[in-house]
Length: 475
Image (cartoon, rainbow, N blue to C red):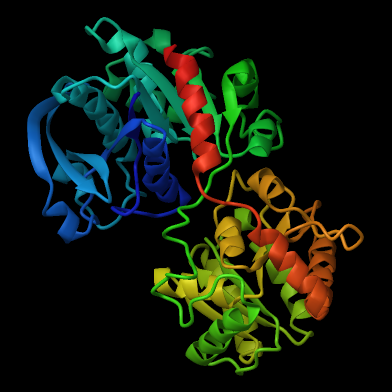
């Protein structure tokens, strides 16, 4: 089984979010099941120099983009046993950051064409191209239309994974028609048309042979108007082709026994875990006290992540003897709100705006609880990392959070966290208070942590399902 992953980011080369973790880790798990997986992505300027310097050019080609012909280099590098192909065009990709430019449509239409043109320079064609999110949504469309008569290409099957339906790559119809060299016939309700514009996400949903998304519950949610982002009707039409497969994490990378970023290695010892809390309290200037419950948050600071609820709940939460550590960046209004709360409670709150991988690991290792009250969450990796580091999640019941966090039941002793269903401040406060009450009951808390430790959060079961999906396509 030869599989080509097409994505806009992948660890350990470049990362802005969970997509990179998935694209970096899943190929390793699939390789253990006998698949031969290659990852193709843009050669960004942000790729570490020690990796970029090892990349070898294997082909040079021109890519036709509307009326333009653009240079494209195809480079190859192997990192951690995974073969990466890099699409090299400095004009499009050697910039200060990955996304957010005015020519986003042109950049990723170019990337989509380049991925398909790169097939002509591979020793063997892939059986499957697995496309990830809107940046690659045009690849299945191009294979079924522009390249349908290319020898060998018609046998390639495609899978399109929706990581977050909110980000759709919607651009003006005229612009996409120009870049794709496409006629009016593909900009219809059954094609790329989306409320008068064109949608790259819709292209992937319409034209891929199979669809997947990153949790079973999210696969159901995106078929409803509440979560479907105006594409729920299109997705319902393809419900028989949609698989919900929950993400995993790389348990070798996220391992508190070997993590070089944390103060004290541990596995299931709460005593050793609390030593990490003492170290983080000292590092961040909080009162050093292992008995104080520490709540951690590592997140993008956006409304999706429930920070409006957090902002309203903070004054009440901070009346208790509790500490909160937050790492993230995002909306300026949210940052201002958090900074105002921290200034009023400097002995209870610590905030780091931006991202710091080492600090993120130390927060997971130090926190007793991990707060994640998302308004929607396709899968979520943070709660899985928290469980791996024996931090008890407090989550809202949506998407992948439902599939991975079971609320503690004091009567049966089951459950690995705490959850609430309605996106309300009262429900959030009730659930946080419930978690704090059980934290103060040592035996019950040890049981909750032990419940979380029993499950494997790695990629093995997910890889097995993807392998089954691939085999349905090629057999």
